Length: 152
Image (cartoon, rainbow, N blue to C red; front, side, top):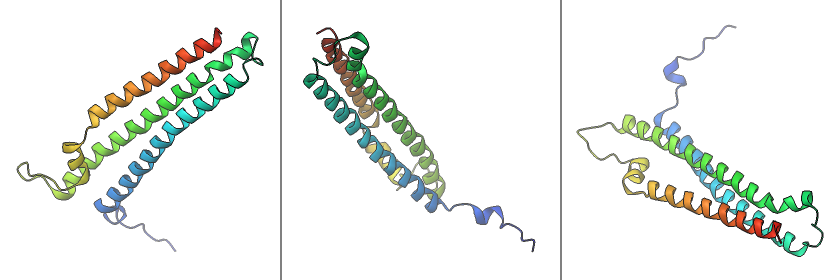
């Protein structure tokens, strides 16, 4: 039996299906962003707490380099955070196009989609700048604490 695949029009996702799938993906990334903050803070805190309670064990240079492990981990978490943030932004831009295609553009009328609403009412640029500053402060604070522990 040789069956033909359905025509392309029938295989395409509807705007609603595509919108739901991409919105779910954004929600997943938002959860991962929250998890990344927790990983960075809890792991760095646990390592520093362990270092404070085991400072006599770490005396020679190779072992002492472990004090910089939290800095490395926070840096990796920051990269992970901004990767997810960038992916959300890319999907959001695409969802703008989906909303425009689904609802149409009529003489600059306001579109009812969530992405258009959040674009007009969100603090995305200020939020991004704020999170960059927070990550930078966290990395600098961790590096300073690691230097203090290293030269102690």
